[in-house]
Length: 163
Image 1 (cartoon, rainbow, N blue to C red):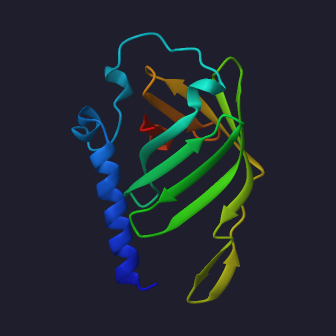
Image 2 (cartoon, one colour):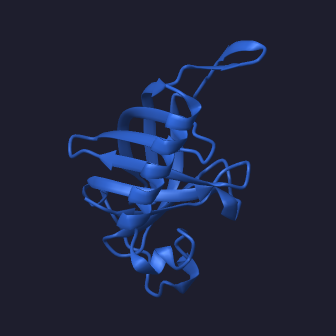
Image 3 (tube, rainbow, N blue to C red):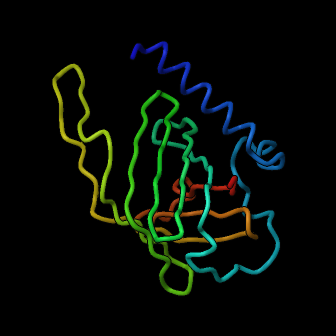
């Protein structure tokens, strides 16, 4: 696949994600401003997650990255992350909602790519066995996740439910 073709695909994915994004989130540059949402934090279970969620976050380069996350009723998930540079990362496995809906555990069973190749050769990509995220819902259609290992606001991923 040529670099131009990859860039075209990434652009098309970004346009589709933007088209599916609620208008109020579009107006904020794709980020959900959780400070403007009034109401108590909702206690949720795994059933609240079931469906497809689209999200965005600022990656290490300062660019916006897109995330497509699907949670299935049987406790499995599939996640694909698309960076602005054209890098695509896929992972899947099992999920659990812990501590009265406050923590999301993602067990990573499969991921791709498994190596990164550059001008000096190829190196393996290693991922942990699981990730843990703080989970917060803002109604039935919005949520944020924040990795437990990162308390910085730049680590927050804002999602909206699309299916």
